[in-house]
Length: 602
Image 1 (cartoon, rainbow, N blue to C red):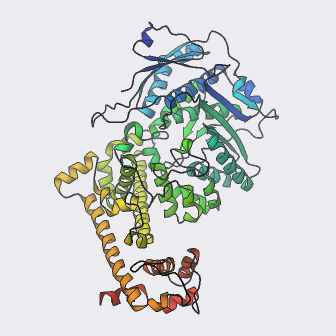
Image 2 (image 1 turned 180 degrees about the vertical axis):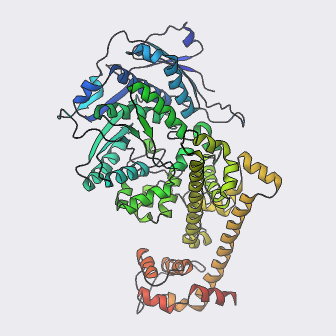
Image 3 (image 1 turned 90 degrees about the horizontal axis):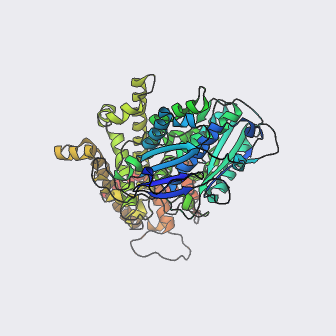
């Protein structure tokens, strides 16, 4: 475990001999004045907010900003110490924070509530010492007021947290489609994300010009601090930001839109459990945040997530159904987007990028998600040894198991996780069934996309043109069958793992397809070479290798495209008619996939 730290905030003072500082590294945080190293700024704010924000709410804003900054500035360790609960990367963080409403924050229930929700979110140890604020601070520095005295509309059902990702966009579009007015609050930690959020909002506003209000909020720390990318306390910050705005527009609460697969985060791999697995919108986290925000506001106040029972594919399909698929290119899902260039917004190797690409493919919308926006192609791009390869293999393995196992088997395997997730649901049994059904749909989508991609990349695979460390190569090499969690280990010992059998069946099927592909390739060039080659002079390919034209035509046949689908496929992939053959005529001249297989086997 790294050395414990105590963060002394807002000009507070702690002596080195003070018990809270013993054995800890002292770090000072300040949000106003010339020595500020934590920056807070709400943009596009109506002047009424300055009159309505309470001292307690300003305290909440500062507390959340300090916690988030400390979280982002404190690097974690890199290795596990055991398989139970202790991690060297866990952190012990103490805070000394001067506040305006001392009686409220000093209350044991509130102090415990703050520490409890943060510990759940990040799996770190937190302690708070709230002390009196000796000199009041000019909090107007936190707000960039627009010319208007008041907001354009009041009393929306919820303030919506608008991250600029697929899920929050789908939720906002769905809400706007119902004719509701929307107040969107966006956190901007770095300037590289601002332009993309702004572009997305501009395109969104074209569809609903009179219904949207956008409040961007800058919360970041000095660059001299370290960079910790996990940011597990971000929903604590988002809830505070949303609550500040919700109070000024008299909203009933704060709303997150995040798919249930991410919200629940059932164990996938060592790389995605405990603090490495996001719990930002887990039902338990939202319940704890609701309890805290009710106390802060002193009224009935809700923090919820309507997408708890939806998969990522469900979310993308909402955009398609709403006629908003054209907004997909303006969204960003990458976990590492804070550290990416403006040219490419997705790393292609993190779990969020994998999930995004699979979901968009499953929804049939890859045309709206250019592969050039990814540093490394999710399916065929290179992956570094360790985290990147493990995450890809485990994502696939987990999806296949979810697909192949029955809901009763899933319920038994993830009983503890499901039970905790439905603890505060009014109809627990029904909620549990919906969660299990959701995970089955997710697994089916993963397996379907995997099969489609292996067929789509068949020629590249046969001729060795995909990286050996890519996701598809890992699957072909059976790396996704290497299990890491206890459930799989037990199944291995029993020697009759249903999940392993299902995954093996899939791999055997794919291997058979590849073998057949090689036979068909030989048959195509042996029996129909003249029909496939143009008559004019072209650069010949090396013996045994397909050119682009042959690859595209052959892939279309292998996939089984016919008629208009065949024509659209080859034209979309840059193949033009040759000689007297137009694409549709060529399709009629060539033998069918079945006849080719029969000829090659004969």
